[in-house]
Length: 73
Image (cartoon, rainbow, N blue to C red; front, side, top):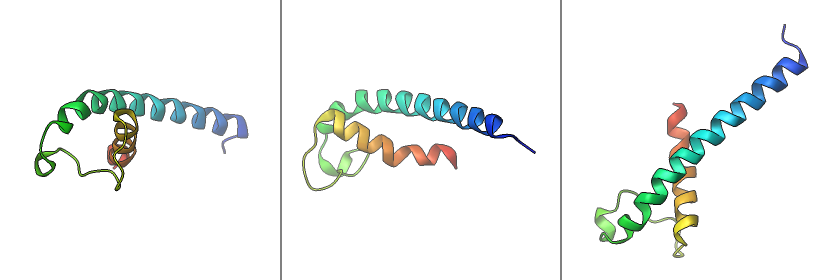
């Protein structure tokens, strides 16, 4: 049986791992996002995020949040 402190420590470790994966994925997508904007819509590596045009950072964050769950499949 695991204790509450062991469970809390495990959750903290998983949060750190998730944040690290998020940061690395975000950095990669942030480099790709300006290049993707130069391409026509039909050739972009991901579909547009919503109806409004987002800043590069907001677009990279939104794409990262859409892509990241696939890392855990």
